[in-house]
Image (cartoon, each protein chain N blue to C red):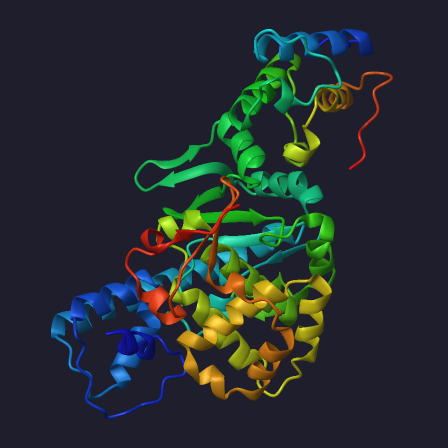
Length: 92
Length: 353
């Protein structure tokens, strides 16, 4: 995958989440996935879609509900995998 | 039948000429096999001269024991293979439960293990799975005759995200599968507590019949057995499938304590239980083990330990949790009666959220 910048990454992730979120909601980075209609099953769908979109595979350590609570968490984890400048790894 | 079942399952059973007639041979045989007590039961059966059972009963028990012996040899092989693979590890790990109990605590054929459990810290999961993959293991399921069916990416993500587990790893050697299960938390205890990290700092190397391997130190081993038993005995999913109270788990605690704490100071175990904050889990497991294996009631150190770790409120002793529904159910009968019930799930009543 070509190198992408922070803004493009945020835009792409937001678009992807928006396409899978509850209808009638405008998704923001700060949103918690549970608040925009994701349950334990659709969260798995979202992770698989993100992996496909960015051609990455989440490592076992990142596949934890507490690490993937919000859209921002998702952006941050993908950003670290893709070495996107300006994205910092979340501390747990 | 109940008393005979517990008696035949007692690893430390005394020889007797007493005449014993099971109420139902079928039930006794089924109970021994389903509780994985066939090996001990077979050896005890041969020492009970007054046990009145049919030839067919004896043949079946012998077949179970012989199969246990075959599985014992396979386990030795598997522990050897795993030890070799993990000798290259750059992270802390320990083999749990069967790898030690079946090969070092019990004589061969007394206990069967279907898999090998490994404990690692969650932060080392990728390194652990990487090492297994390098050693030829594949995540998925094994079907005899078809081989290993690799897990889909969805299954792997689903197991991690929704059950906090990893899909088991398999490798086939000489037509026999080795199954490895990775554990990274003490049941019910969030790893923020740091228990696994502490346990993995205290591991010991033991020399088994298949060579050296790393396992938990004595006190941690006991605590892990207790917490594991408590989790399965008190969670609705296990109750529903009848896997909540299998006698071999109680036997493990009974035999481990009796053999490994013989004349040894139990204070360290008590201190460790308090350090980890697992008084409830350990009390449940130890207390109920003494209910089904009554010889423990004569073990002074065991009873002293129980007294010292006993929580003030004992309501949890008869409660079953439904994690998904966030509900607590309870039952109202003595533990031994509860153990022998055929449909435990049907006897539970709701206690609210």
